[in-house]
Amino acid sequence: MSILASVLSAPVTATATFAYTNADLVSAVTDGEVQPFEVRSEWIQEAMEEIDRRTAMCFRPVNFEDRVDGNALIRVFTRCFPLLEVSRVEVDGADLNPLSYVVNKRTGSITFKEGVFAEGYQNVLIEGVSGYNKVPPLIEKIATLIVAKTALSAKNGALVDSESIGDFSQNRSFKKLNDELDRAWEAWGTRAGIDFAS
Image 1 (cartoon, rainbow, N blue to C red):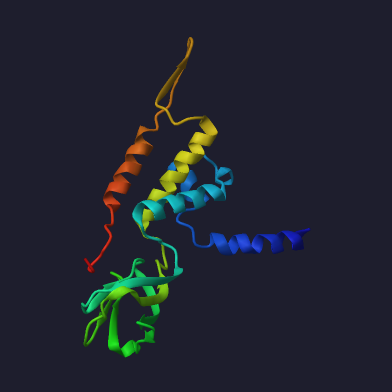
Image 2 (cartoon, rainbow, N blue to C red; image 1 turned 180 degrees about the horizontal axis):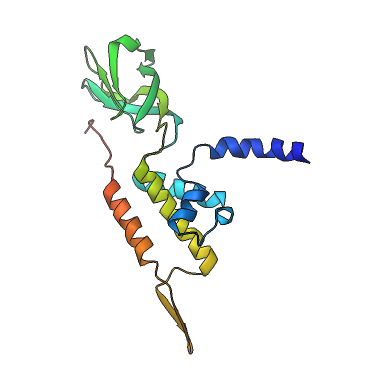
């Protein structure tokens, strides 16, 4: 049985090695009200997906293939950034020599050393790996707070400040958790799309 468990848990371990938060952090932010064993992996996955959607970024390393428009300028931008690696740049079907361009990994820009990217519709192909090797602390905090809210909601019912049913009333304060999450989102800000073709 232990062999079966180790075989079955291996892919889960590999998948969970890069998560934006973990059960221990969620337990700590709830002051132990939610125990680590009560935190479900799908809650962490859902928080990661929400963060990726709201920020228009991905914080775990992922392979990407971007087709962007050539803009008759010296620089194009990938849709995914920051970059960990650029493995290939192609313009109008021809691979570029890596010595002919410079990559700014932080901004996701590819800059020609000489010349410009030929103008065209999705004629520039960029392949590589984007994301982070380590989750930024603010993203870890946002993920932890999202999962904590989910866990507390699952444990205590809807996240309301007060509720009354007949003569029975109960007050629970999630204001601190909500305020902290709002401040963290605000601190991260938003990312606008970059388009130099127009």
